[in-house]
Amino acid sequence: MESTLINVLVPALLSFVIGIAITPLVTHFLFKYKVWKKQGGKKAIGGHEAIEFNRLKGEGETKTPRMGGIIIWASTLITLSGLFAIAILFPNSVFSNLDFLSRSQTLIPAGALLIGAIIGFLNDFYDVTHGGQGLRLSIRLGLITILAGTLGWWFYTKLGVTGISIPFSDNLELGLLIIPFFVFLTLALYASGVIDGIDGLSGGVFASIFAAYTGIAIIQSQYDLAAFCATVVGGIMAFLWFNIPPARFWMTETGSMALTLSLATVVFMTDSLGDGNGISLLFIVGLPLIATVVSNVIQILYRKNTGKKFFRIAPLHHHFEAIGWPSYKVTMRYWIISIFCAAAGVIIATLA
Image (cartoon, rainbow, N blue to C red; front, side, top):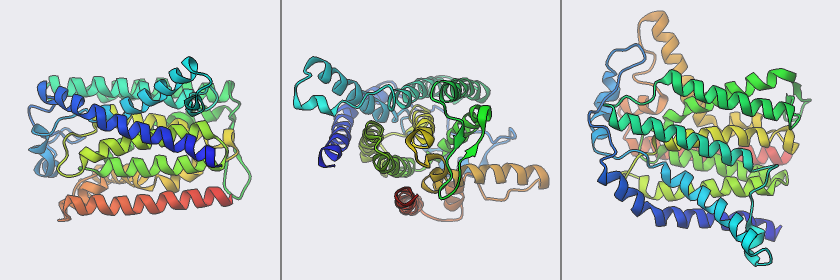
């Protein structure tokens, strides 16, 4: 167990150190090319001005660089590929045991992280260069659906995933429906990416979630996957070091899309493939993300049916800001809830 913990924690530490080291380069790039919106504010889903959002965040969008999520996925992928290269070049060295790139556990999550990072980067690029208009939502959803459908098909046909594990109960068999279920899960997690709205908020929440799945993977003896999740946590912590108020940069789509798409695969990998309950545990571990999505759905449906808003502003974290909570208070309370949810998820994984 001691060697296992070392093999999990060392990549996390490396990812953190690499993230800290590359931040000055990324920051220089972001400020040199003025990677922020030239005009703040946004439109609501109905096409009208998002008054509350623009009051809270509109001005800040023209001052804070975007694409800070580069720190997260770059440090993770550099660590992953670097340790893999060392294992190939120096197979008998002590560092060869730290290689956690494996086809059975980490190739799919790493691929999803990279693809999400690329799509998100393109969206952020268009957002900055085309007057705040990134890739159309329909295009992003289409790309994610294609990716998720392909991965869902792979899980079903190649890995034999046909159902969802339920803690303390029998599995729920879905058969071929596991493919559209994976698509739905991926889209829902992507929708939760809007939690990246307050300095430090998304970093703390995602770090807690990936830390929880690190523990869950260890419990299920999926050590390479645990090392991957821990490495992501290291990258997030490096990002968070510079994202606490006042943020040096924001995560935006290149970070949130990479994390949410990768998380979807991790959730599936820690379910029936690992003889665990990764999907069910998401409803506990990922409660802040679920609350974010649900609050948006409630706002849209309530406004459609009544013509009024249920929340002052959606998603939920902005509602708390709108009613007078300081942003740092919202962030810290979300962190506390996230830590409790992560701990609860790991405990249930141990008992189930």
